[in-house]
Image: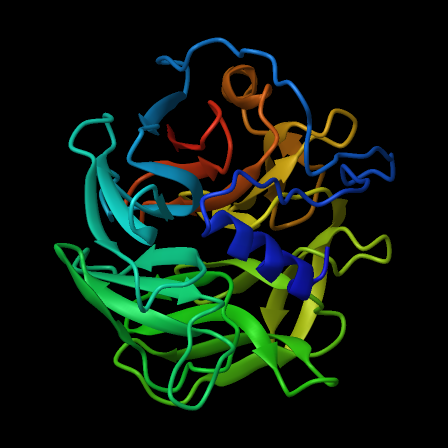
Length: 339
């Protein structure tokens, strides 16, 4: 699925249609193959979420199709983007224990809020909107807003970058998007001040095609999940250093929007993905030093293995708590907490 098709799918979501956007294809990191379709058909009922490493944070009549989710620095509150059933694209918060679901904002200027992250001090949300419009650009922008709500403010320097994934680290924002104009649009990874300014391209062009999820270590190493960089047009994970992407893993089947995070000790990347053979949700870990890709806990898999719309993923800055979204789990989409 290319970017134009993804935007059309997003437009359908924002008109309150239940649309599946999973990538199709093969890959589990070891060369095997399989397929997954955008509509997996009837989904089996998985065991209920419990105390086995994963709990349900939000599944409610107020929203559908969660795109991305991020915990606050201490993992106690989850912020996520989704579609409000009454007001369109929106930002919500909920306690990590599943209580206190609150709609913080909905509607214009948000259009396709596929990514969300939070500042280290837990006060500011940064939203990556691929469809937002400014006075001069129609290819998306980043927005900031306080965790208490209020109208999002467009971050200067970002209009036209078609942002997808976003991560805040210190006083900087790292995000994925594109550079150039049609027909020479290429994938790019950017860094810029949280206060706004001119984004600096950390990497641009091949092998990047559709860079999506992004994560940054404590020492500033950048990892990117590109949804279509592999020769099979499936996902690859790259480390970005010195302006050159180095491939860490490839041929991973992912959903949309694709999510990436890091373990608490920065020793492994954690990927929101789909099982190669079954086409159902999976969360994988890949050692940054190299090694085999592994499923993140059988207990997690027991809960999410019946769903097929794996989406955004982020880890709390100060703990090992992850927020993870599935765009259609439990029929209309669910946000989970993994810890």
